[in-house]
Image (tube, rainbow, N blue to C red):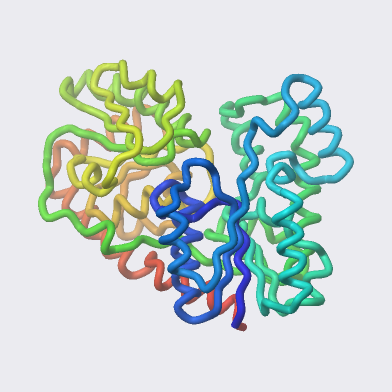
Length: 402
């Protein structure tokens, strides 16, 4: 099968965030069995070596320059213009700004030239490149949604974590209408969790919904040989993503100070690339280290007593949770951090909601090596049985070839 994969996010190296990781490993699996052409956008930080390495995984790699925020009209006039466009076109600015004419022309020519049997959009924002008539030209036109943009807005407003609440409330109805409209262009919708499936079911109509969960590269995240003990916490994620920034602040400003009243030597490592100014400031707090991008995330996981994922916003399976469990690190997390994971029977991680819940759960793990060992072993077993990229790739392949 000849597959055209569309990804505005350059999916290499597969360590910079959830979108890159998922896209790369699904691409890697499909390219071993099919002819894969990847069309993507290259930002300035993508090196020539990254391009050359990624090109080795596909039959053809086509790159276009990624638009930047600087390309947008600035100030209040720009905001008014973008909102007016949203009203007129029904497509949000976060998606339309990616739609460069050159990339669209290339995709049109490739599809009209009959060069592909299937199209995949690797994240819902890439739907902007898919024209409704593609379904008459190509057998399968699939969108790997990752998570609902409308649902994310609702989640942020409900939790008080929205960066611009007034704007987001104005956009709610438009975003719901947008999702109802764009899914009609696709033959199949791919989601990561049962929660996402239930959310999209009312708007999908007769379009089939498929679950393809995330996975872990078990060679990149081996089970740690020893439990380091101690009183150290770790949280991993791209530190310019709003959900991770909110989590980092909650951990450093609320959970850790309360925890240090019981365990004065407790520490927290915030591990991830592109820390915002707000995240960097957290490094001034007692016990907090902000690392920025690191050569090996798994080394920080292996050195931590507990991985904490107290996310309040963000839908879908969290790679950071899967990777910690694969590495043999006991996890304390929120419902959002544990979405899509069967962790309660038997217990494979500890669930928490309030600051007090987190301090109590972390304290249990600090004080009980046997509990740490049990959760670590069960967590690894869950990943090996259910959340590998091999299994995810097989499920994705089935969607495309059925």
